[in-house]
Amino acid sequence: MATNLLNEMRIVMVGKTGVGKSELGNSLLGQKHFKSQGFAGSVTSKCKFGTRKLSHGMKLVVVDTPGIFDTRKSNKDTSMEIVRCFGLSSPGPHIFFFVLRIGRYTQEERDTIVNLKNIFGEQVMKFVIVIFTGKDTLEHSDNTLDEYIGSDENLQTLLIECKGRCKAINNWADKKHLSMDVDAIMDLVQCTIAVNGGNHYTGEMYAVAEKALKERLEQLEAEKNKEKLALERRKQEIEEENKAQKQRLEKEMKMKRAQLEKEQKERERKAREDHEKKQRELVTEAERLHQLRIEDDRKAKLQQDILLQEKEKLEEEKEAERRRSEQKRREMAQEQERLRKEEERRRIEQEEVEEKKRLEEEERAQLEEERQERLREFEERRQEQERILKEEEKKWEEMKDSRERLRQELENNDGVLNKIKNFFVSGWKRFVSLFGY
Image (cartoon, rainbow, N blue to C red; front, side, top):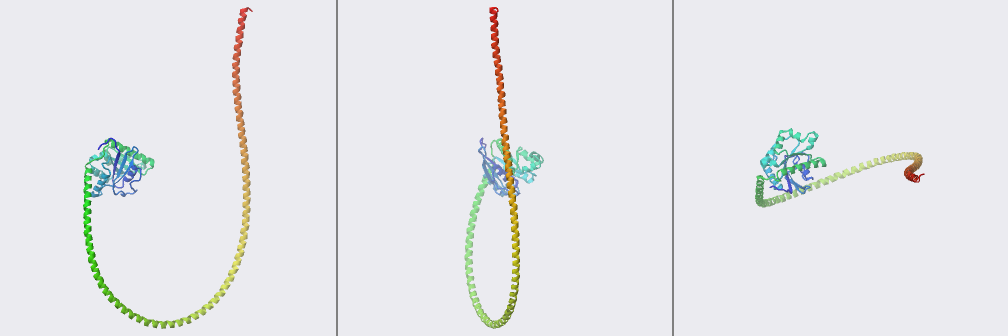
């Protein structure tokens, strides 16, 4: 449907996994909206979209697809995601971005374009713009985009199909250069929309997608009801199994209880016999232990006498060691006193040195202050002399101006006197001529 004034611009990004569709979407939206990572694994698992307001008030809608045109995905998964993609870009995208990464144009990517045309029809190429990510690769290799495209005949064929509409972008560039790339892409988008008369893509695929979505919802509802009935039947079966198992367990427990009572009586009889036997053994063991205790007492008394002798010997050795230790403590005390006096002497010498240094520092500081004071006085005298010279120069200039004015006045006065003289001379001549002198 054509419109003269667009209030919404819808873009759908397609391409194989890992070419940088999510980063491109974030660059177009000016924010981290789509989750992306810098390694070759699909982060986007479902179609997602993001929006932003453009400077002229138009709404931009960008749809990120999880490789839905990837030939390695099953037809069922692809169909369901196409339906979801249509719903997010309804009533239809104005532009399809076919996203490629700078590098080798693979057969898989060529198959993606074939799938795109098979699904949407040949007319979709009027709405396709090829976006190359990884522009920095070209900059590092000192190549241009035209040179890169010219090196691959398949790329040239693709660009011919979409009327040469392509741009490159470095999604990781600094803010200034990224903004320039985005502006160039948006200018191409607006130009393409204008060429298409403001029309968005429409086709039979949208009707098929809506029908497929409705059938899928009905199928999911039927499967849900079927699962619910199966769960209820399974619940009844489990209850019956639990009831039968409970009866079986009660019967087994009754039999086991009788068996346990019989075994308990047998264990009690055997325990009594064992107890009587142990009692007899304990009496015999007590008599043997009594004899052993007597022998142990005799040995303990002998051991005690030996220990007493060794203790007296140890006491003597301990006393001798105490005297030696006392002597060492006295010697150490004397040495510590000597070291303390030596340390005190060094401290006094250090204080004298520091005091001498302090006095020298004060003297140097005083000399520096006097030098600075003399410099200030010299500077003040110099400034005063400069001021006097400037005043003298100013007076001299004023005197020169006064002399010039005086000279001009004198010249003016001489002109007046000459005029008066000429007047009287001419008057005298007329008088003489009149009276005949």
